[in-house]
Amino acid sequence: MEAKKFNNQTESDYSAIAQSASFKTLLSEKKKFIVPLTIFFFCFYFTLPILTSYSTILNTKFIGNITWAWVFAFMQFVMTWGLCMLYSKKAAKFDELTNQVVQERGTR
Image (cartoon, rainbow, N blue to C red; front, side):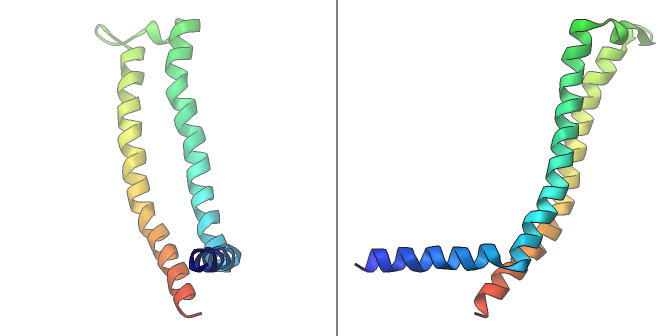
């Protein structure tokens, strides 16, 4: 009997949190950040295999014997590190919004 009461209380707590303005703000901010970066990441990532498979544009020389395909492949590592650093900095704002949700919930 206690487990059911606890479960109902947990469900109502989640419903209250999910309906709060601060929680909706948190989800909105995360979505505005993550969706465009995910689209950019996948486009950038899959461009290399698509271009190397269906065109010869990346086979032209960049410097010496290094072709654009190698430069593009290296830039994928740079992009990955850059996105990780960007997310790490942006996570601080998400943490603040999460703390705001928790504080709101604690005052009720």
